[in-house]
Image 1 (cartoon, rainbow over the protein chains, first blue to last red):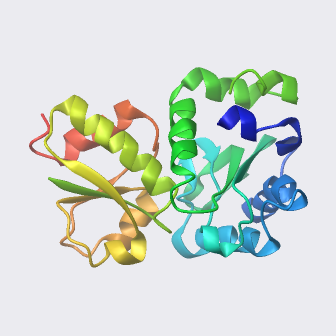
Image 2: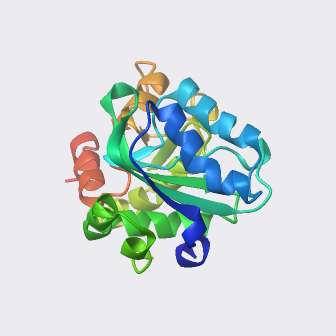
Length: 142
Length: 91
């Protein structure tokens, strides 16, 4: 499912961000632009981190910003952003890889989460993402 | 044995973690099940152990709950190691 969701227009490469909030805004841009999510979904993802801490950092250098379906998801989607420089979260956590997850109901995204989990468990995949510069570098991974 | 994987809204991170905790339990031969839940509900839900990222575990901790902090939610070896460290039955 990752392959069909992570099309060229959903994947971005940027230099960096001044803080994690700016990074979440930037990483959500493709989903927002294509109408998958509403602006309030981005704010909900940010308030989650403010309220509960950086638990969206799933492993060193990988974050998965997300909120609840009712926070403004129109259609299930996922976007990927890779930064050149690490973005700093609280607790000293950092991320260069951002998977923004937009789930439109509680069950539809479970399969997608399982796939992301298996993908990230393979260290080789993560290291390819960390050194990727363009879509062609990652398109065969999924 | 009941283990709760906990995160902020109980949907994404904790579900992903619960998948891997269940795999780890199986591999360690522990009879138990891991479900996922949001932080607010988990505060009043009883379980043998609670697992999640360190800052979530800190917010959940009340001196009585047995919490297991994990940094990497997808690394099965780290999860197994943390289960072995915290659960006496997991040897």
